[in-house]
Amino acid sequence: MSQVLRTVYRAICILLGVVIGAALVILGVVIYLNTPPPAPVSAEAAGPLRFEPEGAAIFEVRNGESSLSVGGRLFQEGIIRSRLFWDLISRFDRDYIKSGTYRLPLPMTQLEIRSLLVSGRQILSRVTVPEGVTLKKTAAILEDAGICPAEEFLAAAADPEILNTYRVPAATMEGYLYPDTYLFSPGYPPALVVRTMADTFFKRLAEIQGDALELSPQELHQRVILASIVEREYRLDDEAPYMAGVFYNRLDRGMALQSCATVEYVITEIQGRPHPEILYIQDTEIPNPYNTYTHRGLPPGPISAPGAVALRAVFNPVSSDYLYFRLVDPSQGRHYFSKTLDDHIKAGVLYVKGRVS
Image (cartoon, rainbow, N blue to C red; front, side, top):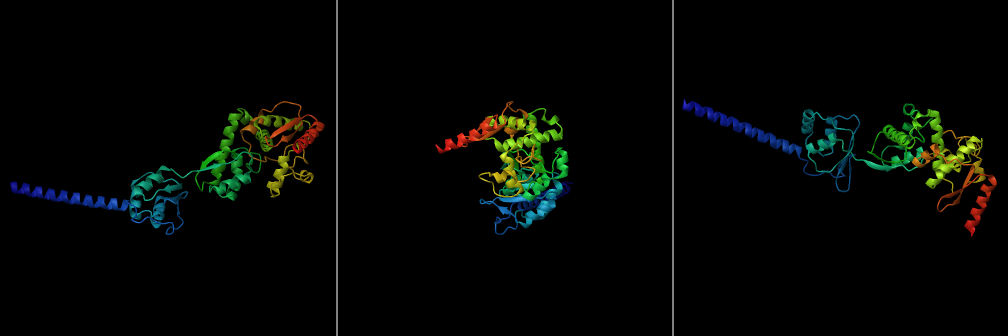
């Protein structure tokens, strides 16, 4: 009987040894396959992959791309040692990798790479869209920052579906994309950029004027148009409500707004000419619906992206009898407000004399 026990004991020991040996071999293989390739990939050896100066790789997971496809590209770029091991991880790990642009601080193990891609911790670029810019200028800013192509952004800003979603009664989202600092990942979908900026606009508008969203789309559109003009006219915050009041007074009296900013918009955005340093009489006579010297009332649409100061001004204008304003101190941006054309003209003469002296 003791002989049988010894035989069984030997068999168990051998079996355990085989199992432990096999486990160690498998563990060694897993560790080996999980480790990065021995030689880091150089920027010259890589295909479309981008590298930062310190060696980190910029890797994009395409929208709708499968985990297996990502593994194939990582293997081709020499970032991972084994495509088979990546496929095995993907089958056992039920978490999905997320599309976007990632920074891979190489060398990294496969498990580290997958953890990063599953987390969604993408590269985000800080993009500042200044107050008073137009759609075209916004598109150029986004393209320069590598967020999205300008033409695709402009197409998204004119998408009827997006316009209907935000109840914008116009051909584009001009004026409804809030000027602010945003964090977008490179290659971010243009439609989502537009929606993010539009969401910010309506959120800020509700904070500025609680009942603004209760207006009809056409009523709100008129306020946005006027705010876009005030945005391009004021330089000092405290003067914006006075300017809004002047424009309301002129509209009530059926007078032309005579905003230089609208003429500049015609020259730069519609005619595509350089921004003028000086406006001449012939400029104010350009036949265009956006020219508020030749056309009474509001222009057809906004001429810029109004910020909080301009939006607040058109909802809370200063009540006065002023019908005119003109710049009298360019260094400080101070304007002179007047009730009559004579005073308006005199202010201009005084300003010229002041500069000469």
